[in-house]
Length: 114
Length: 242
Image (cartoon, rainbow over all chains, first blue to last red):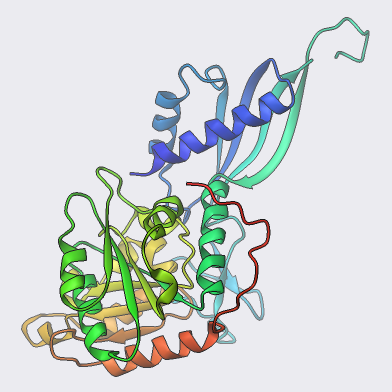
């Protein structure tokens, strides 16, 4: 389980950004979580609830946006059905994973600045 | 400041960042990668379940490539047994005992390089913690990911752990010598892999009998040919931390 070390890195980065901008409060942290990012949303949220106590994120809302793992053909763009072999049924070209479907991204932070 | 009336109240602003949460690890991994390339060392991240045969593959690789200088770091939660096995097989090895950590990160690999004569190697293996979940998401600075999957693990393993197998530049189907004793069809494993990554590269081998090891050697040689011999370039912005 690596969700704790990820949340630790997230909180540290958000605090650093808030300090750089002289923020007086952090209201929300928006994270995009790809289905193939290797991160479990529930564990991530649990880790967040545990870890944020006593940090600058203590009162911040965590907004998680899931990104589904969808594949499409690299040549003709046709969608490849879920669970299918990752080659286009029409033209035989290999599939490509949707952008951000394998990523865990800190998208934005809502903070109060003077 | 509130710009509507100038009352001095704070303002709520959205700060757009759009960056990877693992950006810090990725920077350290890039640093490791620069080190390996500079020294002309091919670094491979070997992953797989506990008992998938990672250490046995490395022992057999030492027998297969006597002309190459091999080295390894081997990660384990609690023992240095694998590193000692590798040493006995003639592979200089260092153990990384991770405690409760279920994966290696780039900083652990970087620390393990200190005091280890990795620059003199042709081929450097990072034998990751036996785990099909966590190691997949941490870049360590390797040139390629090799995932060991033993034929005893079940035909649908790639479907159960898509994140790991999707990251595989090569899948080694190990313990091929056990196939006659199992109700396992290799084609079904290949089919499962083709459903989690578009162009799976798969080699069936046995560290015990040597079956399939030539193809593994060819793959390593092809990868080595892509690593420039001793670049000797100064590392840009090279800062040496812990």
